[in-house]
Image (cartoon, rainbow, N blue to C red):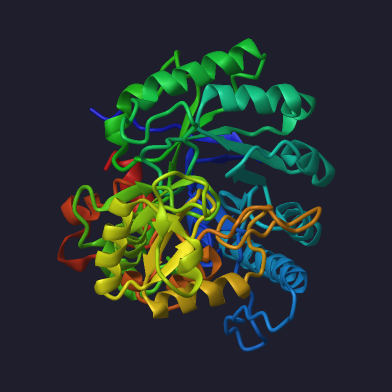
Amino acid sequence: MFKGLSPIVYGGREVWPLVEGGKGVSATNHASSGAWAAAGGIGTVSAVNADSYDENGNVIRQVYPQDTRRERHEQLIQYGIDGGVAQVQQAYEIANGQGAININVLWEMGGAQAVLEGVLERTKGMVTGVTCGAGMPYKLAEIAARFNVHYLPIISSARAFRALWKRSYHKVADLMAAVVYEDPWLAGGHNGLSNAEDPRAPEDPYPRVKALRETMRKEGVSEDVPIVMAGGVWFLREWNDWIDNPELGKIAFQFGTRPLLTHESPIPQEWKEKLRTLDEGDVLLHKFSPTGFYSSAVKTPFLYDLMHRSDRQIPVFKRNEEEGTEPLADSGKAKSMWVKPEDKQKANGWMAQGFTEALKTPDGTAVFVTPDSRDEIRKDQQDCMGCLSHCGFSSWKDHDDYTTGRLADPRSFCIQKTLQDIAHGGSPDDNLMFAGHAAYRFKQDPFYSNNFTPTVKELVDRILTGD
């Protein structure tokens, strides 16, 4: 039998320990997060490239006509602040004093600190807490203290939490409202897998969360600070043993994937319909993201193209760098790429299929693409607006000399372009479609049968029953 949840005190009021995941570029906005808060939970506005609106309420599309990346980057920061403020203000109105409104930022997004500070400056009294992951956001506590908001670090191991606590968070312990444990094998979007962890060998979250609580206790963190389990959460009855468990302490639950399929969810209808068709295994944990992090996304033609592009890859050398190598071709840029005879044979096969363009990677290899694909890759790299603090695809860095110093990587993609496109009507097949690994359950869960789409309130009520 499902034990049921008890409310927790957060931001001075009782709320359900149910957190809406703050899903990236325009996939969580005021409508969904405001409704989640109105239902008594903690709604989360995504402050990552959030939409802003004109005087008629139409989305202002983010365009970058500036000549330089630095100028485009400044424009991106302004879009981010204006959009984050617009989303928070509207979510706060919809919540109408119920639940709480958080904002979510990725520390590795370009200009993260400037965007976060800009949004908080203009939304005082509306934001209860800031969730932040994708990197090691040491400055998060300091920023929270300056604006007197709570903060909720997103981590994937006890070790990561300990590093943050020792370096920074212990100084602002009273404002740390919760610690979000995001399972690196189950969550959607970017995942915090470390180099010591095997992406092909998922670990049971229970021992990892138990270790996190033990670390928190050892460091003197209050027992009132809940751990939020994020990633893979669908039916709460499946987490019955976690509720009121003295080993784990106070637990809350985050839902990222399920709120995508609601009336208030801002994602396009075609994306919602695609979610209903997924089978187990249709979400891939991969490392094509320009952030350098692993991430989880639906296997669409867009993702398959990246997989096949990396499959068409061989080592390349300079002249006389490696014994037994020969020029890839007799003319053009390929003449300067020296390869082993067996790899030249592979390359000739790919070129015969139309993948005639060899593009160098930062790892001493070349990938083979069509001329059209080459042109798109180069244009996207040139159009970079600095949406990440470090971008592998374009070699942008948002500080110091504004370059990572590495060759731009054609095995990756412009993440800003594709996430904006899918969120504003672009086909899921042609774009990166983030989702958690439990997304296949839309197809199996009777709640969604006969094409039923719940409101956020209906979803929260359903979750509270254990289903």
